[in-house]
Image (cartoon, rainbow, N blue to C red):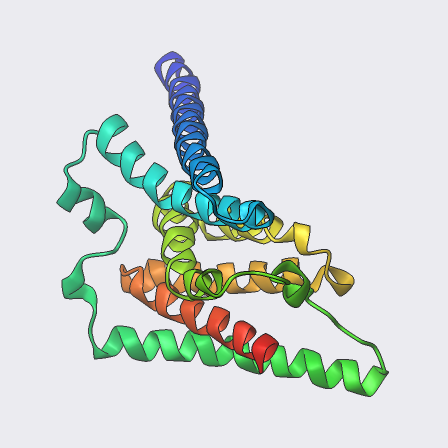
Length: 228
């Protein structure tokens, strides 16, 4: 009994240390990309685009921090780290693509359902994504479609799901979208729902590709609705 009691705090303490280490790595990585953003502005890039550069810096910090944490702190090699995140290229198969399309289809159906409910009740439901990307340069649209999903899925699904579970990782992912200030916090709710579905797909398939592909398609659809 005494031995079991002493093991629990040790395990909890280890998780706290790991969290602190990861947050420090994330802070240092973001500082690095922040400095690069300032140098780009100093080199003549329009200063009004600094906020968009910082958005990209934050996204890149996620993926970079995950790999740095696994390799530098957990002692994994590059291949082992990639495999632990579910990014083994061999896992990309027709089955994985079908799962990704199913995940995307569910999100589209939910989005359409919300629109129908809004029309029936006469309520305007806005996600404010258009406002968030207002005035953004073209490269940021491409960045949000092809790069952001990879970095976010590496962090929220690849790293978090095995360590804190599907529900907790989905809630954190959803709270990360709170800044959009959408109607009824619909953006937060939608992100949590996606996080739950993506986390489940990742856990069952052992591959990060379904959630990455679905995430890319969701972002692409959102951007097309803005520019279309």
